[in-house]
Each structure stands twice: as C-alpha cells, then as structure tokens.
Image (cartoon, rainbow, N blue to C red; front, side, top):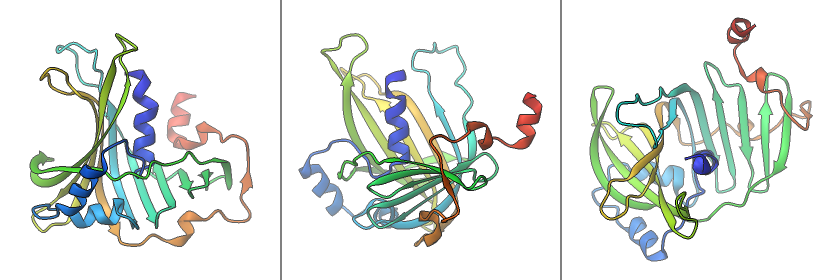
Length: 252
C-alpha cells in the first residue's frame, strides 16, 4: 500500500518513533520481564537511555498485498547497515550495498545526511519523535537460516483512512522482534509492518526487514555522531554516488 511506504521507512530509521499505546499497556510491558529471553537488548536499544552500536547484514522487502496467490513474492533488497544511539537524542544509521556510503545523524533537533566519501552533507530540521514505548506481546520461537531461535515481540499501532472508505480507519501494526540463540546472544532483529485483519481475518503483511547481527557493542564511537569541520554543507546530495563503481559502469 503506497500510502504507508513513507511511514514504514520512518519507523525503521527512527527506532524510537512508535505509534500509540495506552499508558496501562506500556507499564504492563515494562513490568512484565519474567519469561522474556531478550529483555536486556530491548532495554539497551529501546529503553530510557539507549546506548549501543551494531552492524548487520540487512534485507528488506515490501510485500504486495494486492498480488494474487499465484504471483511470486518480490525478492528482498540486500545490503549492510549499522546503527547506534548515544542516549535519548543522538541516533545514527549507516547503510550501503557492500560498504557504508551514507550516514544519517539525528540529534533530536537536526537531521543530517552525510556522504563521507565526498565530504558533503545536508541539514534539515528533525521531525519530532513520539515518546512512547512499544508493548511487549509475547515470547515465541521461529526458524531462520536453518536454526530455531527464541524471540521477544514488541508492538505498537496506528490508524490510517481505508482505501475503500475514507471515513473507515484501518489499523496498522509495527512489530519488532529480538531473536536470540541458545546462549542468549542477540542474532537478529526483525521489523514487520502489517495491516490488522478485521472480523477475525488474518493480518495483511506490508513490509519486512531482517537485520542479521554481525557486531554488537554497548557503546558507539563518538565520531559517528560528528561531522568533521572540513565537510561542506550542500542543498542536495548526488544519489548516483551511493552506487558501486561496477554497477555504474554496467549501466553505462
């Protein structure tokens, strides 16, 4: 669904930005620690004072909700990424195909898109974040890459007008799963976007992003959040610079 694409991307980039949930649900989630297998990672990444740095192999895909059962699910987009937080306000996201080519910095007040290879960056005013906690839903198991993992699932939700009737509101779920191995080590994060089914129907998947963790640290390098003084501020960055040279040559 095209109208949720921008919302999906914003939820992934700004992890702390989650949709509404009652205070009663939030308190229940924060107090219900027994039985959770990845609670320490939730606290590290989504707690009151998140501090962490991780690198991961990433794949994401938008799922075509209008496709017939005979049509194939589109192949996921793959790449690498890194993410870091230094307390409540500072957030960094790095992404690329085979190496990091873009760095997005959020400071609470400003948002920067940095191209380190060009020593250039853009600056805009940061969007305000919703200061809401996600709700713990369940602990369960799933299989990924031939291995069975346990995971804790957290959710938040928001509403948008229906495609069929603007006066009817559809409910969308933002889902985050923390996957751990038998030793309790965080192995992956899974983000899902689903439209909640009505009248007992199953939820409609919209989007999924898998981040397979390759490196995890409790604190991030400080220089990730900084822009060197010799970098130049520009109005717009060249998108083509984000591609590998080999791919550009093939296109030419």
